[in-house]
Image 1 (cartoon, rainbow, N blue to C red):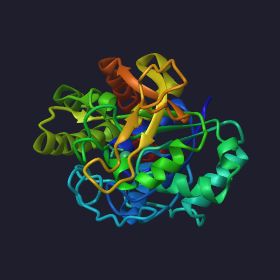
Image 2 (spheres, rainbow, N blue to C red):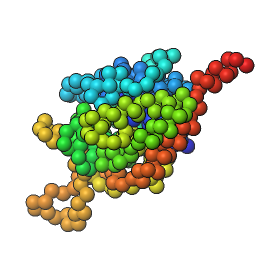
Image 3 (cartoon, protein in one colour):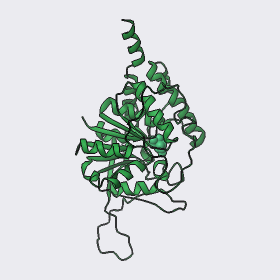
Image 4 (tube, rainbow, N blue to C red):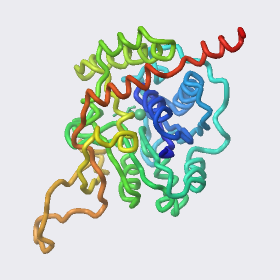
Length: 326
Ligand code: RIB
Ligand code: CA
Protein backbone atom coordinates (compact mmCIF):
# COMPACT_ATOMS: atom_id res chain seq x y z
CA UNK A 1 0.00 0.00 0.00
CA UNK A 2 1.39 3.44 -0.95
CA UNK A 3 2.78 5.46 1.97
CA UNK A 4 1.71 9.13 1.95
CA UNK A 5 2.41 12.19 4.07
CA UNK A 6 -0.22 14.92 3.65
CA UNK A 7 0.91 18.55 4.08
CA UNK A 8 -2.31 20.49 4.54
CA UNK A 9 -4.28 23.51 5.76
CA UNK A 10 -7.58 21.96 6.96
CA UNK A 11 -9.80 23.13 5.31
CA UNK A 12 -13.01 21.31 4.34
CA UNK A 13 -11.49 19.57 1.33
CA UNK A 14 -8.28 18.83 3.26
CA UNK A 15 -10.48 17.06 5.83
CA UNK A 16 -11.85 14.93 3.01
CA UNK A 17 -8.36 14.15 1.70
CA UNK A 18 -7.28 12.93 5.16
CA UNK A 19 -10.22 10.50 5.37
CA UNK A 20 -9.76 9.35 1.76
CA UNK A 21 -6.02 8.74 2.28
CA UNK A 22 -6.59 6.92 5.57
CA UNK A 23 -9.18 4.68 3.87
CA UNK A 24 -7.16 3.67 0.82
CA UNK A 25 -3.46 4.38 1.52
CA UNK A 26 -0.95 4.16 4.35
CA UNK A 27 -1.16 7.64 5.87
CA UNK A 28 2.11 7.85 7.82
CA UNK A 29 1.91 11.49 8.81
CA UNK A 30 0.13 14.83 8.59
CA UNK A 31 1.93 18.18 8.53
CA UNK A 32 0.14 21.50 8.74
CA UNK A 33 0.69 24.90 7.19
CA UNK A 34 -1.03 28.33 7.18
CA UNK A 35 -3.49 28.87 4.36
CA UNK A 36 -7.23 28.41 4.83
CA UNK A 37 -6.59 29.72 8.33
CA UNK A 38 -3.62 30.37 10.64
CA UNK A 39 -1.32 27.43 11.28
CA UNK A 40 -2.56 27.35 14.88
CA UNK A 41 -6.09 26.73 13.60
CA UNK A 42 -5.12 24.33 10.81
CA UNK A 43 -3.09 22.30 13.31
CA UNK A 44 -5.99 22.17 15.78
CA UNK A 45 -8.26 21.12 12.91
CA UNK A 46 -5.89 18.33 11.84
CA UNK A 47 -5.75 17.02 15.42
CA UNK A 48 -9.54 17.25 15.83
CA UNK A 49 -10.10 15.40 12.54
CA UNK A 50 -7.66 12.68 13.64
CA UNK A 51 -9.74 12.23 16.80
CA UNK A 52 -13.01 12.22 14.85
CA UNK A 53 -11.67 9.50 12.55
CA UNK A 54 -9.80 7.60 15.25
CA UNK A 55 -6.46 8.04 13.46
CA UNK A 56 -3.24 7.38 15.35
CA UNK A 57 -1.15 9.44 12.90
CA UNK A 58 1.50 11.97 13.99
CA UNK A 59 0.65 15.60 13.26
CA UNK A 60 3.49 18.13 12.89
CA UNK A 61 2.92 21.87 12.99
CA UNK A 62 4.51 23.89 10.18
CA UNK A 63 5.08 27.34 8.80
CA UNK A 64 3.01 30.38 9.76
CA UNK A 65 3.94 32.53 6.76
CA UNK A 66 5.23 32.23 3.16
CA UNK A 67 8.97 32.24 2.40
CA UNK A 68 9.13 35.89 1.38
CA UNK A 69 5.68 37.49 1.20
CA UNK A 70 3.34 38.35 4.08
CA UNK A 71 0.06 36.47 4.12
CA UNK A 72 -3.09 37.91 5.67
CA UNK A 73 -5.37 35.09 6.86
CA UNK A 74 -8.99 35.39 5.95
CA UNK A 75 -11.93 33.12 6.52
CA UNK A 76 -13.39 33.98 3.12
CA UNK A 77 -14.05 30.42 2.06
CA UNK A 78 -13.50 28.10 5.01
CA UNK A 79 -14.75 30.36 7.85
CA UNK A 80 -13.32 31.63 11.15
CA UNK A 81 -12.17 28.20 12.37
CA UNK A 82 -10.92 27.20 8.93
CA UNK A 83 -13.43 24.33 8.97
CA UNK A 84 -16.81 25.92 9.83
CA UNK A 85 -20.02 23.93 9.56
CA UNK A 86 -19.65 21.20 12.18
CA UNK A 87 -18.61 20.70 15.79
CA UNK A 88 -15.28 18.84 15.86
CA UNK A 89 -13.87 17.16 18.98
CA UNK A 90 -11.46 19.19 21.11
CA UNK A 91 -8.08 17.56 20.31
CA UNK A 92 -7.10 14.82 22.77
CA UNK A 93 -3.39 15.17 21.91
CA UNK A 94 -0.73 17.68 20.86
CA UNK A 95 1.24 17.96 17.66
CA UNK A 96 4.63 16.24 17.76
CA UNK A 97 7.61 18.35 18.90
CA UNK A 98 9.31 18.32 15.49
CA UNK A 99 8.57 21.19 13.11
CA UNK A 100 6.78 20.05 9.94
CA UNK A 101 9.90 20.74 7.85
CA UNK A 102 11.99 18.38 10.00
CA UNK A 103 9.12 15.89 10.21
CA UNK A 104 8.87 15.70 6.39
CA UNK A 105 12.65 15.13 6.12
CA UNK A 106 12.58 12.47 8.87
CA UNK A 107 9.67 10.53 7.33
CA UNK A 108 11.17 10.67 3.83
CA UNK A 109 14.46 9.34 5.23
CA UNK A 110 12.64 6.58 7.11
CA UNK A 111 10.56 5.54 4.07
CA UNK A 112 13.23 6.15 1.43
CA UNK A 113 11.98 5.58 -2.16
CA UNK A 114 8.49 4.77 -0.83
CA UNK A 115 7.00 7.99 0.46
CA UNK A 116 4.67 10.17 -1.65
CA UNK A 117 4.42 13.72 -0.30
CA UNK A 118 1.03 15.39 -0.89
CA UNK A 119 1.03 19.18 -0.47
CA UNK A 120 -2.61 20.36 -0.50
CA UNK A 121 -2.05 23.80 1.01
CA UNK A 122 0.66 26.42 0.31
CA UNK A 123 3.98 24.70 -0.50
CA UNK A 124 6.06 26.54 2.12
CA UNK A 125 6.90 23.52 4.35
CA UNK A 126 7.81 21.36 1.34
CA UNK A 127 10.05 24.01 -0.22
CA UNK A 128 11.96 24.56 3.05
CA UNK A 129 12.38 20.80 3.52
CA UNK A 130 13.85 20.50 0.00
CA UNK A 131 16.26 23.35 0.77
CA UNK A 132 17.21 22.12 4.26
CA UNK A 133 17.88 18.54 3.11
CA UNK A 134 19.04 18.42 -0.55
CA UNK A 135 18.88 14.59 -0.47
CA UNK A 136 15.11 14.81 0.06
CA UNK A 137 14.54 15.13 -3.71
CA UNK A 138 16.13 11.72 -4.18
CA UNK A 139 14.48 10.07 -1.17
CA UNK A 140 10.89 10.88 -2.22
CA UNK A 141 9.03 8.50 -4.55
CA UNK A 142 6.97 11.48 -5.70
CA UNK A 143 5.12 14.69 -4.92
CA UNK A 144 1.41 14.78 -5.75
CA UNK A 145 -0.09 18.21 -5.15
CA UNK A 146 -3.38 19.98 -5.32
CA UNK A 147 -2.40 23.34 -6.76
CA UNK A 148 -2.40 25.57 -9.81
CA UNK A 149 -4.66 25.42 -12.82
CA UNK A 150 -4.42 25.09 -16.61
CA UNK A 151 -7.39 27.45 -16.99
CA UNK A 152 -8.97 30.06 -14.68
CA UNK A 153 -7.87 30.66 -11.10
CA UNK A 154 -9.83 31.28 -7.91
CA UNK A 155 -7.77 33.76 -5.85
CA UNK A 156 -7.06 35.78 -9.01
CA UNK A 157 -8.25 35.37 -12.60
CA UNK A 158 -5.23 33.14 -13.34
CA UNK A 159 -3.85 31.87 -9.99
CA UNK A 160 -5.00 29.13 -7.64
CA UNK A 161 -4.84 29.79 -3.86
CA UNK A 162 -2.14 27.28 -2.79
CA UNK A 163 0.29 28.56 -5.41
CA UNK A 164 -0.72 32.22 -5.08
CA UNK A 165 0.02 32.17 -1.31
CA UNK A 166 3.69 31.28 -1.85
CA UNK A 167 4.77 31.29 -5.52
CA UNK A 168 8.46 31.11 -4.59
CA UNK A 169 7.85 27.92 -2.60
CA UNK A 170 5.90 26.43 -5.49
CA UNK A 171 8.73 27.34 -7.89
CA UNK A 172 11.24 25.45 -5.70
CA UNK A 173 8.97 22.40 -5.61
CA UNK A 174 8.21 22.33 -9.37
CA UNK A 175 11.95 22.66 -10.12
CA UNK A 176 13.02 20.00 -7.54
CA UNK A 177 13.30 17.13 -10.04
CA UNK A 178 11.05 14.92 -7.89
CA UNK A 179 8.48 12.98 -10.01
CA UNK A 180 5.48 15.29 -9.75
CA UNK A 181 1.71 15.13 -10.19
CA UNK A 182 -0.29 18.36 -10.25
CA UNK A 183 -4.08 18.47 -10.10
CA UNK A 184 -5.41 21.97 -10.56
CA UNK A 185 -8.73 23.79 -10.50
CA UNK A 186 -9.39 22.89 -14.15
CA UNK A 187 -10.07 19.37 -12.86
CA UNK A 188 -10.92 19.75 -9.16
CA UNK A 189 -13.81 22.17 -9.73
CA UNK A 190 -15.60 19.38 -11.63
CA UNK A 191 -15.39 17.08 -8.58
CA UNK A 192 -18.24 18.43 -6.45
CA UNK A 193 -20.46 17.25 -3.60
CA UNK A 194 -24.11 17.93 -4.49
CA UNK A 195 -27.13 18.65 -2.31
CA UNK A 196 -28.21 15.00 -2.77
CA UNK A 197 -24.80 13.80 -1.59
CA UNK A 198 -25.15 16.00 1.49
CA UNK A 199 -28.59 14.54 2.20
CA UNK A 200 -27.09 11.03 2.06
CA UNK A 201 -24.34 12.06 4.50
CA UNK A 202 -26.86 13.67 6.87
CA UNK A 203 -28.70 10.34 7.03
CA UNK A 204 -25.48 8.53 7.99
CA UNK A 205 -23.58 8.00 11.26
CA UNK A 206 -21.94 10.76 13.31
CA UNK A 207 -18.86 10.89 11.06
CA UNK A 208 -20.96 11.12 7.87
CA UNK A 209 -23.17 13.79 9.46
CA UNK A 210 -20.07 15.80 10.44
CA UNK A 211 -18.91 15.81 6.81
CA UNK A 212 -22.48 16.66 5.76
CA UNK A 213 -22.31 19.76 7.97
CA UNK A 214 -18.86 20.70 6.65
CA UNK A 215 -19.96 20.38 3.02
CA UNK A 216 -23.16 22.35 3.67
CA UNK A 217 -21.10 25.33 4.84
CA UNK A 218 -18.40 24.92 2.14
CA UNK A 219 -20.94 24.56 -0.69
CA UNK A 220 -22.82 27.66 0.44
CA UNK A 221 -19.61 29.76 0.55
CA UNK A 222 -18.51 28.57 -2.90
CA UNK A 223 -21.96 29.43 -4.20
CA UNK A 224 -21.91 32.91 -2.61
CA UNK A 225 -18.40 33.66 -3.92
CA UNK A 226 -18.11 31.79 -7.23
CA UNK A 227 -21.71 30.87 -8.05
CA UNK A 228 -20.82 27.16 -7.83
CA UNK A 229 -23.59 24.68 -6.97
CA UNK A 230 -21.37 21.94 -5.49
CA UNK A 231 -18.68 21.72 -2.78
CA UNK A 232 -15.43 21.26 -4.72
CA UNK A 233 -13.34 18.31 -3.55
CA UNK A 234 -10.04 19.90 -4.58
CA UNK A 235 -7.63 18.16 -2.20
CA UNK A 236 -8.64 14.48 -2.35
CA UNK A 237 -7.90 14.64 -6.11
CA UNK A 238 -4.17 14.75 -5.28
CA UNK A 239 -4.42 11.16 -3.94
CA UNK A 240 -6.14 9.65 -6.99
CA UNK A 241 -3.00 8.56 -8.93
CA UNK A 242 -2.21 6.19 -6.02
CA UNK A 243 -5.76 5.01 -5.31
CA UNK A 244 -7.48 4.67 -8.72
CA UNK A 245 -5.38 6.16 -11.56
CA UNK A 246 -8.18 5.53 -14.09
CA UNK A 247 -10.24 8.34 -12.59
CA UNK A 248 -7.97 11.25 -13.57
CA UNK A 249 -6.14 11.73 -16.90
CA UNK A 250 -2.73 13.41 -16.91
CA UNK A 251 -0.63 15.01 -19.63
CA UNK A 252 3.13 15.37 -19.27
CA UNK A 253 4.42 18.94 -19.61
CA UNK A 254 6.70 21.53 -18.02
CA UNK A 255 5.09 23.79 -15.39
CA UNK A 256 6.55 27.18 -14.50
CA UNK A 257 5.31 29.56 -11.80
CA UNK A 258 4.92 33.32 -12.33
CA UNK A 259 6.92 35.04 -9.56
CA UNK A 260 6.16 38.60 -10.55
CA UNK A 261 4.03 40.88 -8.40
CA UNK A 262 1.53 41.80 -11.07
CA UNK A 263 -1.86 40.41 -12.02
CA UNK A 264 -0.34 37.07 -13.07
CA UNK A 265 1.40 36.39 -9.70
CA UNK A 266 1.20 32.66 -8.88
CA UNK A 267 0.02 31.59 -12.33
CA UNK A 268 1.07 28.01 -13.21
CA UNK A 269 2.16 28.21 -16.83
CA UNK A 270 1.70 24.72 -18.29
CA UNK A 271 3.52 24.34 -21.61
CA UNK A 272 1.43 21.96 -23.71
CA UNK A 273 3.12 23.06 -26.97
CA UNK A 274 4.47 20.14 -28.92
CA UNK A 275 7.67 21.86 -30.06
CA UNK A 276 9.68 19.63 -32.36
CA UNK A 277 12.48 21.89 -33.59
CA UNK A 278 15.35 22.49 -31.15
CA UNK A 279 16.98 25.36 -33.09
CA UNK A 280 14.59 28.32 -32.59
CA UNK A 281 15.26 32.05 -32.93
CA UNK A 282 12.22 33.76 -31.37
CA UNK A 283 10.12 30.92 -30.07
CA UNK A 284 10.88 30.25 -26.36
CA UNK A 285 11.93 26.63 -25.82
CA UNK A 286 10.23 24.44 -23.24
CA UNK A 287 11.67 24.28 -19.73
CA UNK A 288 12.86 20.88 -18.55
CA UNK A 289 10.85 20.46 -15.35
CA UNK A 290 8.28 17.97 -16.54
CA UNK A 291 5.16 17.28 -14.51
CA UNK A 292 2.08 15.05 -14.79
CA UNK A 293 -0.64 17.69 -15.14
CA UNK A 294 -4.27 16.63 -14.66
CA UNK A 295 -6.38 17.40 -17.73
CA UNK A 296 -9.47 15.21 -17.33
CA UNK A 297 -11.53 13.45 -14.66
CA UNK A 298 -14.37 10.92 -14.26
CA UNK A 299 -15.94 13.40 -11.89
CA UNK A 300 -19.07 11.59 -10.74
CA UNK A 301 -17.23 8.30 -10.33
CA UNK A 302 -14.61 10.02 -8.18
CA UNK A 303 -17.25 11.75 -6.04
CA UNK A 304 -18.99 8.39 -5.55
CA UNK A 305 -15.69 6.76 -4.55
CA UNK A 306 -15.03 9.50 -1.97
CA UNK A 307 -18.65 9.40 -0.74
CA UNK A 308 -18.39 5.63 -0.23
CA UNK A 309 -15.26 6.15 1.87
CA UNK A 310 -17.03 8.70 4.09
CA UNK A 311 -20.27 6.73 4.43
CA UNK A 312 -18.37 3.57 5.36
CA UNK A 313 -16.19 5.24 7.99
CA UNK A 314 -17.08 3.80 11.44
CA UNK A 315 -18.27 6.18 14.11
CA UNK A 316 -15.55 5.64 16.71
CA UNK A 317 -17.35 7.58 19.39
CA UNK A 318 -20.28 5.14 19.32
CA UNK A 319 -17.80 2.25 19.11
CA UNK A 320 -16.07 3.65 22.22
CA UNK A 321 -19.47 4.09 23.95
CA UNK A 322 -20.41 0.48 23.10
CA UNK A 323 -17.06 -0.78 24.40
CA UNK A 324 -17.53 1.21 27.63
CA UNK A 325 -20.99 -0.31 28.28
CA UNK A 326 -19.79 -3.93 27.87
O1 RIB B 1 -7.60 26.41 -4.32
C1 RIB B 1 -8.01 25.30 -3.59
C2 RIB B 1 -7.04 24.99 -2.50
O2 RIB B 1 -6.96 26.09 -1.60
C3 RIB B 1 -7.47 23.79 -1.63
O3 RIB B 1 -6.33 23.12 -1.17
C4 RIB B 1 -8.21 24.44 -0.49
O4 RIB B 1 -8.17 23.65 0.70
C5 RIB B 1 -7.40 25.69 -0.30
O5 RIB B 1 -6.26 25.36 0.47
CA1 CA C 1 -6.05 22.74 1.21
